[in-house]
Length: 230
Ligand code: GSH
Image (cartoon, rainbow, N blue to C red; front, top):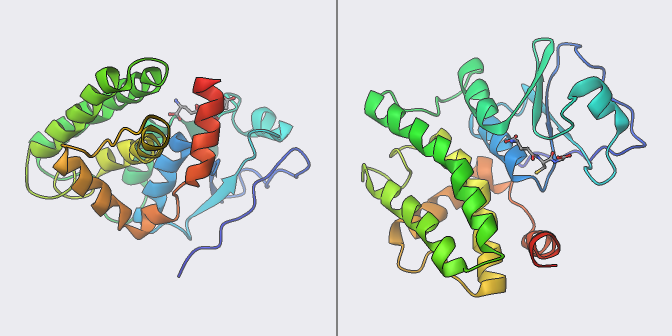
């Protein structure tokens, strides 16, 4: 069954009853960082354990910064009488502190590679965002080549570490947006000449826990145009 997604809370909304024992994941439906943690929650089957609280970032409720998360960003997670943030930390936190399938393989070599790939994701997204104002082929191209090479490393499944893991989650929201925007605006197909990346996107797309988190393509195009090309 498809989860019914709650409406976004804006400046007119009341805050939830904080620290009442409910675990809450504060997100925004368009935010790729929040999407990472949302996917983690879904693929671990935690829909009943972690409540989604979507925030309207354009018309933000004052209580979010004042009472929930002083950094005033999404995602954040309210759990065990504390609120923590930072999407990469939260992927790990949710994976290790909640039930559901582990999102890291047991193999230490793969775990080590996972750390390297997850750490690289910041560089990856910064380089691609920067390319929108420069030479896409020259600047973003090598970033997608990096993914293609990484996907070839173990060659025992469509995902970075064979099985679906934290690494796929770190990259999926950004690859989703970059594919849309680069195709639409620059006519640049990120999968062309990159069969592993093409297959990876196809396989990630099949996951129910991911499907529902996908962003409206038109919103990506509009947002990125106004942010990077205006
Ligand atoms: N490094 C943070 C993470 O990985 O969680 C970035 C989170 C972030 O930048 N979120 C954006 C946000 O909340 C939305 S996509 N922006 C609001 C603001 O900066 O005021």
